[in-house]
Image 1 (cartoon, helix red, strand yellow):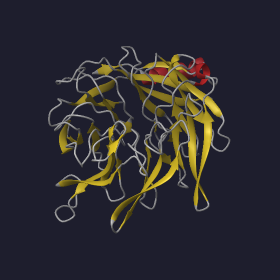
Image 2: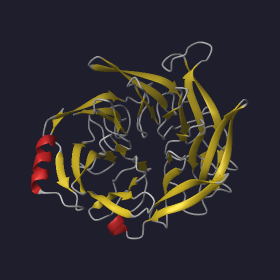
Image 3: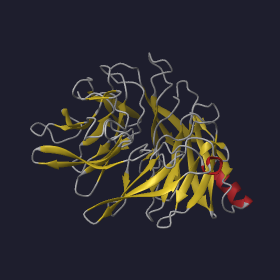
Image 4: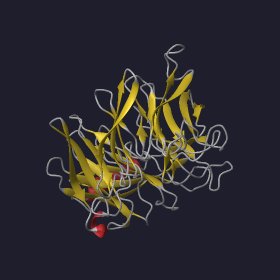
Length: 410
């Protein structure tokens, strides 16, 4: 499927007409949108709500939140010449192993996949079972490759307290020592959720509750800077915000970097996680409102944490629900869940130039065979190809389609 991206200039910073025309001419070169896999709701799973990750060989890994034997799957997509081979790696059973993987996985220093499920696990929270943290890798006695003889191991079963209840929909993050950090939703003594650490010892993994939010808990996963400080999005003063969880002596210190006050200027609801550039600047998004109604992309300058509006998205309560991706040139890529030409979501690019940003609509989902409602990050390979998931559309026995995995080739 060939398409021509639509470009518009940001209201921030001077961009001359010549620059806009030149960049428009470059972007008008045909790009190719391809559906790599259409979920059926059977063994492959359905409704991929999390984005993808890629290993050094360029293989893609992701999760489907339902399907399989009922509680979702983990899958791999491997390039095979001009086509892609889809392989279900694991089907969650809904008992002690977990159910509904809705957060993007991470690849550990040992090449093993790590992720969470929002339910299952056997412990009971207010809204049902509390979920799990799991690893998926080869049996150490059989195979040394992540692609064969995979074994799922639950490394933690969440509970109301002190383990803080269900894990959030955002990904966990590793530090340099191999510890995992994540965010939980509110349960029991940790009504607004908290930040946890999972550390591995000789007897397995141990969870430590590092912080419980006194109000307005975190809304997605965490990212880490070079010093090991953690960043994420939260409810702020009620409309959304960004926090830093920083090392302080032998402990940690919570710093609220930004809280939205003006929803018409700044946007509303920081639903997605945040992204860091090499200088330590933080990029985040909002779900709705802002100057054009469809949420916003904004930047917090490193150190001062001054707010700058990068771009006001168009639409109505269908903005990004996953963090942005930055390439080596400093371009930002993301998805919206309900904006775009057909109100089924889109893929967009923001290019810094001339003191401002240029917005390019890379693809508009139709909700049909191509997919719709992408609750996904964008993954970029070495050739500049983009990959992601769409939680609806496609085909299968689901109410609005079972979802797709897609690629955009420049």
